[in-house]
Image (tube, rainbow, N blue to C red):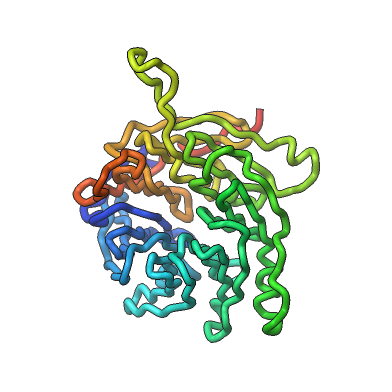
Length: 352
């Protein structure tokens, strides 16, 4: 296999990237959602040295999240226009699945249960069936505003304000959606308090369904396991990252950056983090060690995604809101990089 290579996509979104998502399986299609009110569809070339823009899908307002559905021709978006949409990527047709009463921050697709779940700043989850589109979505009230959402094969992790983390059982959500109207809303499988003291910025689930990681605005990442046993909970840990030493003349200490993005490698179970310091690091969750840190990117790392086969890592780069820019614009500074990983680049050493 060829050594690792990295290239910049020629036609990136025109404003800040909010999310990246690769299609399932060995497909090389990549979706990017942007504050420029579009979702973009790319395809990584066979040689792995280029990514062609196949199309863009305009929305009425900034697109805050995007994911693929059952195959490489189906996408779902979450928008500032309060809407959750399905996009047929072959025809460009957009269908509104549901409407929240505030912007929709996140959307995830569960292939195992054929569900699309959206999380809105109106403090609700909407659970949609993809096998029966005419079915009314199930609305679940949340105790706080959601900031991040991730699904494993059997669990849904919702990270909210006030350090609240709710974990739902996906089979229970699927059966609640199928139950008659008027049935009580399903309760979380677990309710936790975040291990991180500051606002959660990202959450990602382990591909082996064992647990998840979260990151905060204060340069930290936590790794936790789903199993509720004392032994399993004793394994959880958190660590500092995406920090730089402050100049001595400024009093020293650390300059702390938000950790904006997390993504687990689908094959090796290691994970990548991206931060406001413009760096991407690879971590071995089992061995509790950093495997590598890549060269600094020109701006804040906003989004990350591994391809379904783990061969590619997509990196969305744009100015971070933490820079204090008065009239924020990512125009001209938004970049999309794709790294083709070496064969063992993301392979962990395993637990110590």
